[in-house]
Image 1 (tube, one colour):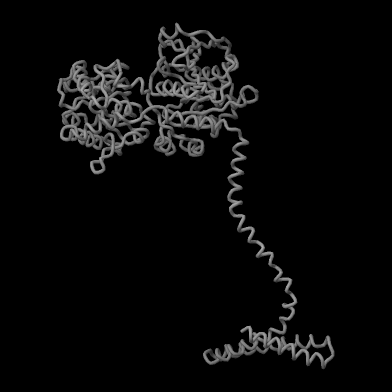
Image 2: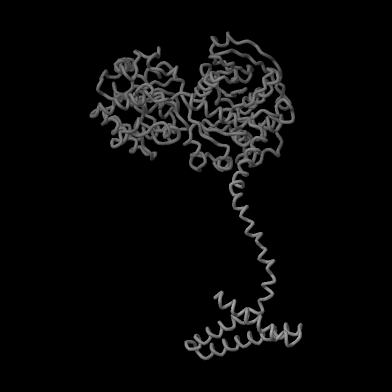
Length: 599
């Protein structure tokens, strides 16, 4: 199958978050499964010259943005067996930042979306599926359906759209977007591209993509609620039949403590001595007290409310009173950099914070920490908790999104679990959970080492998830006729099973009972029998009922008898009087005898 991943970032070329890890790790796994998978992303100035030197120019053309024509060059290189394409335009991507700072993000990624579609013909590559990631590529499914579907080359291309974080949607004024992509007013309605008076790139992907995915099963459920849905929950509920959550994996070759060159000493589940060395060396590197018996808690994250740092801010003194050390790595909001800067001076030798994106230091924190704290307000999937488990650092997490799908709280009664969790977004619930983890670390080493080994031996690879993505790709590319034929076959099955009931219909055809109408014609002769019964019943009833009921019953019986006699006389007039009388009597007697014997 031919697959094209369209994304705004991808490791090892450029990374700002988990999106880059997903695209960079999933594509090689699919390639090893025998699929023709390729990746396309912008050629940022931040991409290392080491990789730029390996790129070759594939084609050059102009991208039409309404009244503008912008240069586009497509460069390529092969990495881990996967072909990567880079969209080259110095005006849009030769800047000192990846995204988020300029006022023309709608134009940059509107250009990127159209460039991806236009490049396919120039590259002579017709994918079966374009897999789009996050809002930066949300316009690709929309443009394909709206502006390119009339061209034969594009008619059979299907799209899958993955939500990595619903909070970031790419919301812009409508007019500039129209001026960039040439989209008419009729498309900016509440059921298409308009969202609360603005153009919404993520909504474009959600409306026009053939299938939708998120990065964990729990997050797929959560975003259909008002609390997590970011004002798109109604649309997601409407498309729930096309929405599936597939848990992310990690690159188990990159995060492998038994061979990781970035950590101080390698170790595995059966030889944990190297982890103790990693802890001691990390404490030295960060300026912490070298204390092997003190629990070291690691945090590697973007510093924001979403990641639960407001909870840490609320109880930081109580946290430090548990006796832990804290190693923090990340960049983000100024109030949290200020918080940890203050904490470093307040608790010297116990807290170390580094405000940077340092891949090597991240590996050393995973390897050297005893616990890993992730109290996220929401977490679509989260990779850090899986990496920490891989390195024997026990996760302490809030039960949300992918954290709930990957970390099971330790249960002392069943001995199940691989970490510690809390449910309510509450600072003191988090504090209690940290205290519980510290208790096991300090007082029950047997359980603690069991958790370490259990975590390190878990399967966090992409192989299972890659199989689920392939099932999705096969589903979306299956011809419509296959669906209809299968559906009709399924519908026919119950009919076949019910066939025996229909065959029993001959009982209805036994309407020969109606053909026995001659017997029915003899009914007038039988009617006197009910009359007798009515009299006997009436007599018994007369003794019990009041006078009014007696009178009514007798009148009814006499009326019936009179009608019966009248019909008998009428029937008798068709033959000679004598014969009729004799025959009639005989017939009547015979009938009465038959009736009595039947009774």
